[in-house]
Amino acid sequence: MASPALICDTQPWKDLKAHVEDIKKTHLRDLMNDSERCKSMMLEIDGLLLDYSRQCATQDTMEKLFRLAEAAHLKQKINSMYSGEHINSTENRSVLHVALRASRDKVICSDGKNVVPDVWKVLDRISEFSERVRSGSWVGVTGKALKDVIAVGIGGSFLGPLFVHTALQTDPEAIQCAKGRQLRFLANVDPIDVAKSITGLNPETTLAVVVSKTFTTAETMLNARTLREWISAALGPQAVAKHMVAVSTNLTLVEKFGIDPNNAFAFWDWVGGRYSVCSAVGVLPLSLQYGFPVVEKFLKGASSIDQNFHSAPFEKNIPVLLGLLSIWNVSFLGYPARAILPYSQALEKFAPHIQQVSMESNGKGISIDGVQLPYEAGEIDFGEPGTNGQHSFYQLIHQGRVIPCDFIGVVKSQQPVYLKGELVSNHDELMSNFFAQPDALAYGKTPEQLLNENVPQHLIPHKTFSGNRPSLSLLLPSLNAYNIGQLLAIYEHRIAVEGFIWGINSFDQWGVELGKSLASQVRKQLNASRTKGEPVEGFNFSTTTMLNKYLEAKSR
Ligand code: F6P
Image (cartoon, rainbow, N blue to C red; front, side, top):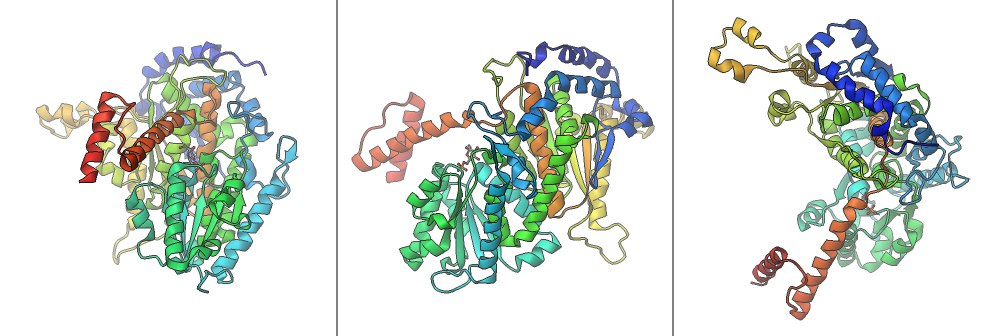
């Protein structure tokens, strides 16, 4: 595949650059009057409704974006991913998280080997193991059933499972399946997080799942040692065999740590950490909590989007459309941030998860071929559930900077609440905001409208809303395991699309290494100063002063 060196050198990129001027002459107020345009920007797939008519874009823009996708060889890149090519070239790896949710009969190969049977071997083991724990046939050393689980892991070994757990824990079907069990997470190395994770738990009835792709991550290994100590101190060192299991690609280190490899659940180097929620990383803790059948529905939801992404034409392909619109907003309209605004409290951990998937994947300044990018790649993601966010940062979104927004709504609440005599339920109230906000952003409010409302002259500038602020809306039929899987896969693939167009490697993360190695130097220094009284040296004036102050104050 002969790719142009950089996408910005292609004609479609130049055409889009020129097209910005046309779009600047339009206003969403007018674009929204064109019902043909709006109709063409709504798409219904597998129960999901996507409406991107409030993007600052016309049908012409979309055509131009599709041409950009062709110039970037998007279709071929998607196919390369699905066929197991080593598209993560800096780590020489396939990128096959789609295989984690493929049905048993699918053939997906990495290095000439169909990986789907291996995936199902682990899924079947998880199904069997989680059932044994949940039914009480696997018990702790004192013979008690293990009803609580602490999943220890950080980054991709934490954020995805936390998002899915948070979304499921208010779903009636999942609640029934949880049967009063608890799932907690321990991510931060901060001792406060350790304390929070074990407070109120009894080691006799607790199972710790250590989740780490590499089994070397400093925070996770320290937290795992702390939990091992917590269990051993209470129940004796032999308890580790019954109370600790692991998820990793590095089974040698799992064994070295003292966890029986028979109690380890593998995954593979073709699964990126932030794309690992559908591997044992998420499937094991979630199956222990909710049972494997619930988690299987989640995998099926993700798989339905995998199919849409792989085979649908671009104009009917949700991840492709969303990815192209992000490119349009970031690289052409100059809006580098994106707000993720689920109108569902159950999705409160969605934005934190997507932050990692997006910013660790696409926060790059170098092309996949090692060339400095002459344009900015990556998106700054943040978000909060509505309506909470409305009372926090929406002021800036309405009258300050332009931030394209993703509104995510759900038709049927997981927990409908009706007050006697109220016609509008809490959920309707929530959704009234979901429907109103995109129009408020698109239309704004003009000085003329304010004058007609007799607003005093001196307040008119303050109360004017310029409008023309882009958003898109995604309406899910409900929030169950299946839909949660769909949502996850939409964003995972959208982010891949952005990386494919920008021409970067979305699947490595060298940018996190420097901080890790500097922290290791500091750690060595702290040890040397404490144990041997060695002076702080080798750091700049600022860090030396801070470290001395820290050591001095701590020793008092
Ligand atoms: O923060 C960097 C990172 O490597 C992430 O990509 C990864 O998800 C996380 O650390 C945890 O890594 P591991 O699963 O190997 O402990």
